[in-house]
Each structure stands twice: as structure tokens, then as C-alpha cells.
Length: 69
Image 1 (cartoon, rainbow, N blue to C red):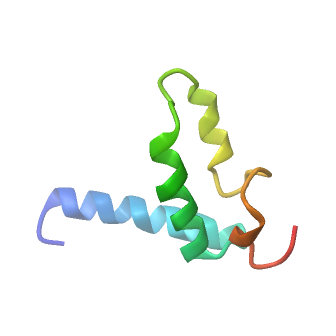
Image 2 (cartoon, rainbow, N blue to C red):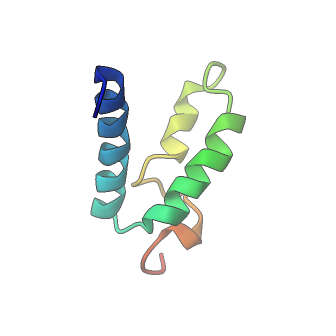
């Protein structure tokens, strides 16, 4: 990384990817889901909605899983 900000941002993405892998998720599908759904979610009004997006959530779409759930 060329900057502290770049290193910080990369570490966040790396953490998301590694946590998804640990939860048996397809990385690409999971990231697409996050990037499409999270911007449309009002976390200010309902901060508890973050639970819908964590890698261990039971509410993730089936296509995010490596094995059927």
C-alpha cells in the first residue's frame, strides 16, 4: 500500500473476505450481495439490520453459500 488509508481499507476488505471464507461462503456472490443491498439499507434508523449482512447470518441468499443451506 502506498498510503495509510489504502492499507486500512485493504485490511477491511481482507477481513471481510477471510470471515466469509471461514463461514463457507462464495466470496464473489457474497460481495455482490453486500455491495448491492447495503447501500439501500438505513442503518441510522435500524442499526440492528447489520445482522442481516454478517457472514454467519441465516438471512443470506442461498447463492452466497458454497454448500446448500
